Length: 402
Ligand code: FES
Ligand SMILES: [Fe+2]
Image 1 (cartoon, rainbow, N blue to C red):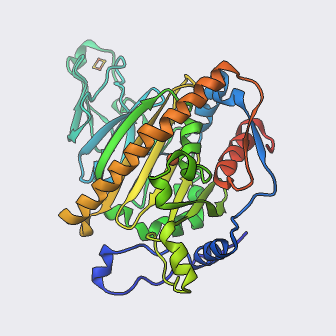
Image 2: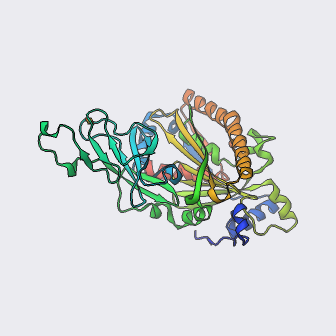
Image 3: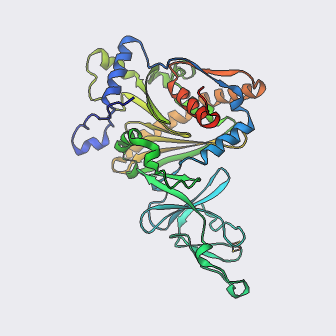
C-alpha cells in the first residue's frame, strides 16, 4: 500500500538540529487514533513458525546462504572516514578487509593473499596505503587491491600482476551505512534493495554525519531470529519490563508499515497519551513515537531524539548461537557533553533491560526449543513486525506463505 511519505517540517532554526526527528504525519495520526480507541494495527491472522526453525542446523545454514545473496550492513562510515582507513571484519567466517578508496568510496576485499592464502592485514583498523602479507611479503595497493610487489619474483614462474590482486566483494555506502554483497550482484544497487520508503525514513537521521558513540558486541546462546523478535516485540514491555521500559512505552499499541522486505514498527511513548487527550498532538517527533526499522534480514535501526540505535544480528552455523552488535550513532553537530551524558544513560537503560530481562528470556526460549523441537511458535495479529520478518524468510527459504 502506498502511504504518504511526507514528514512534518522540522521546527525551523539551526538549534533544532539538537532536537527531535519528526515522524511521518500519517503514522502519528493513526497512533493517536489507536490511543484514543484502545486499538492497534493488526494482521489478518496469527502465523505459526515451526520451532524447528530455531534449532535446526540445516535451517541455520540455509539462512546464512540466503544472507550471502543479499546486501548486508557491515559497518558505518565513521569506522573508516578517510582514504587509506581500513577495518577488518569476519562475516560468516569470511575474512573481509574494508578500505576507504582515494575516490571516497569503500571497497571490501577478501583478506586473503593470492600467493598462498595468508591474511594481508591482521589489525582491526588503521590507515594503510599498502597491505603486506607477513608470510612471504607480497604486497597490495589499498586503493584498488592490485598486486604491487612480489619479493624474489625471479624464483617464480611469470606472475600476471593484473589478475593476482585481492578479491573484491561488491560494496556500497548509502547514508553512511556500508553494505557488502557476497553475490556480487551488480544489477541491484543497495538503493533499489532498500527502496524509496526506507530511504525516506533514514534520510532525516543524518547517519552520514554521525559518529559511533558506543559500540558493543554480545555473543549469546540464542537463535538470531529470537534476538530480532525480542527487539521488535510489541506485546512484552508491560510483562517483562515492569517498572522499566514499560513506563516509557505503551504495550500493544503500534503502527506498522511494510516497505517490501523491510518494515517499520512505530510504538507510542507513554507521554503521547496525555498529549492526545489534550488534543495537542501535532508536530510529533521520536520523543513521542519510537520506531524500529528492520532492514531485512538482520539489521534494526531505532531512532531516538538524540541518537540512532543500530543493531546487526549475526547468525552462526550453530542455530543456538548468534552475535548481536549494537552501536549508538550520534550526529556530530549535536554531540555536546550534555547530549553524550543523555545518550550514555539511554545505553545503560537498554543494556540493563536487554541483558537482565530480554536475553535471559530468549535463552530460556532457546533451551525450551532445543528440548522440544516440535510444534510451532505463535505470532499474534498485533505482532506485525515479527510476522513480517518470518513471512519474508519463509518466502525466501521455502517459497511459500506462512
Ligand atoms: S601467503 Fe602471502 S606472501 Fe605467501
Ligand atoms: Fe524488551
